[in-house]
Length: 346
Image (cartoon, rainbow, N blue to C red; front, side, top):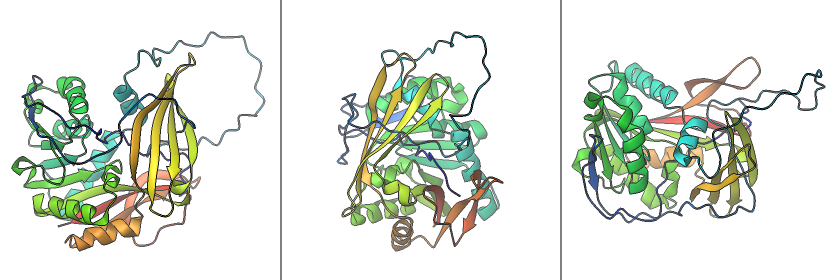
């Protein structure tokens, strides 16, 4: 299952500043603000030494050769893109180029039903960012509730305006956003059926003891029979300092694996966006984390007390590329790059 151009859904990482105020959002979601101690590098638009990109979890290589001769045709005026570096919103670009919340929630919903024989109703989305996934969850059923936890207030505010603002009032009332440390989010983030830590956002915890502490806090927050869902990016290309690009409608998504330290596993990554007018939004998103291996994550989950930890590996289509279908596996292929789900049962 070689996944060329596999792109992590990365935009849910917090900035390095804590929110300063507390208020209830006008969009109808419950919002609670609290300073936190976790740190991360900030987003900026400083010039990048090496632009880069990575494709979404559902992206596939076209296999077409750029050198293939083409039949001559009348010259056409290319359609003008509405996106430029000066006018585009980085969160909109991210949601268009990277996220696929529909398939993510399909997997979570279907897997919980298969394992527990009933649908989950309450979901906790850690490192929720713009709460895009939480919004998709409450759309599914009128009984569904979601709690999003993230300590970057500007990103939460954006999600309230652009994502929660598009929900029906009855749906917005079932979303609670907490600006807190995911390791200690408080009682409103407890007693949930499902918890999510997607986009490899948990990799911001670069110390083993901090990661196990976080996993234990998640386990305590789950109802009896609760399930913790994570995703993981691996393969030998995940350690490579490289730049990959993928064209999206109206702009180019660039994934930059900028620096990797093989001694510590620490890694610096960026997301950039390029536009048809030649302008560039450099370092629109900034990630400094540890590239944890798949065995390490499983071991830490078990040490944190989860009774059963299962890796869901993606199947292949007829061309040997990922088919978007994830199944429990004990043995995977040594692919250059792969995306998996990890399912940890309380």
